[in-house]
Image (cartoon, rainbow, N blue to C red; front, top):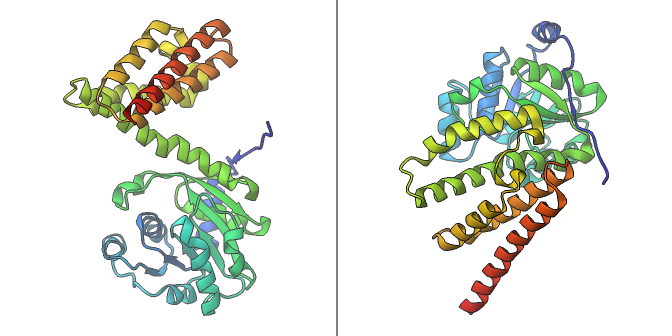
Length: 324
């Protein structure tokens, strides 16, 4: 399998970066197109770090309320007005809208040569801003690897930023990250989608997994599923981040086939949605594969576990067929 590297950079003396920022970057004004949960929080953080915010744009009532709350006194303007006024333009818009927004700004004539244009998309790199780059703008992919609420709670969660930029623009990107209290991680243009898939799989899919686990606990009679899961999940997350696969515990890595079969039978009998059962079976398979690869699970036992899981799939398909 082709392997690529994504570089987490403990870049340099951050005190020196901050001192340099304080003397050179404070003059740059910031404008944000998209006063959503991400854009409004970044603007508020940059404002508190000393950057003048010349304006933000936001169409929805929620965006305008968020701007009023987090950025009192900052003008809410049309995107073209924000672009015209800012030295550093931040496009904090949904992934699927980014290219269209960039093209609209390019057609408006509001973006000028030499102007920095950042976007906060995880998936996209510099290509998404090609229409602005052709006008002489300096594009930077500037993705905060964090979940946002769009409130002041986010101020205390400095994230890693997934960055892509030309060599000449890297100092600006690093200095903005330093001003935000974050850590830079440089991602190659070709690896942006892979980088973002990793984050979505680890964070977004985790939300689905935990919600499914809470549903199962409710079905088992738990009054407060979150209280049951919180200490277990906190320990599991801390351990896997520290030790990787070595942190794995539970019936699969122990080779407890009868326990896994009991789980499968209980899921089949319980009133839970098929997606939860499918997720359990697929993740159990993935867990068995990983445990087998590093020799914590012998091949015979791993094969038996896979057979139990496959039989559960066959039973499910037979049940669906019977329904027709």
